[in-house]
Image (cartoon, rainbow, N blue to C red; front, top):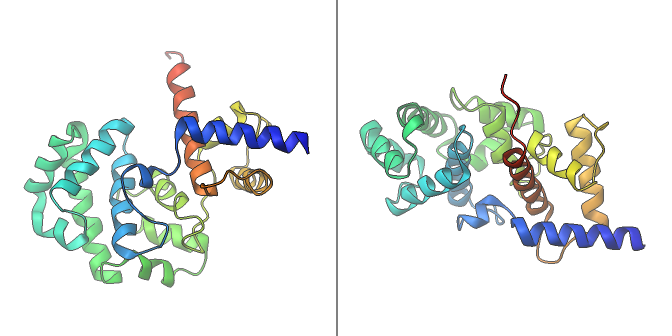
Length: 230
């Protein structure tokens, strides 16, 4: 009992220091699974998926929100030049051209194949693997990292959202003693972390919050221990 009490204390400190879902920090309410909110998070996940700082990605999302470009139709109507301008205002300069093109292609596919509704994409998926495949098939540039960012925060919202743990979440979990270095299977790691959360939940948070906090912990570790040159 004391063991799990300590675990709960560690979880509470982690969430207190790092916060929960990235979506919540952006003011996106995905908990109810409403299509407009899910799309907002999808847009943010695309921005977070590039090799760019969390701060820049968040700042750029807020530029989209300020311009009210938070639906596939609005993004398509804005066009490439307008998207580049918004991306640049957020500081997304290095990836502005590529990301503007990606957003147009993805929104066009989403409109054509699912009526612009990501919930329809989820309903069409057979299982977790097919769901990830469908998300990635929306457009070139939606790879494993972006799909994982998007789907992990929909755990408990979409029944088929169940991606493997990211390398960053696994690094954070190892650092806190939740998993050992011997555990390298990222799907098994999620099962392990779910067991920890079920036994030591923190009031006011859900498992997706816990996972997001572990990701932030992993990012902090990466910044404090950068890889050696060469």
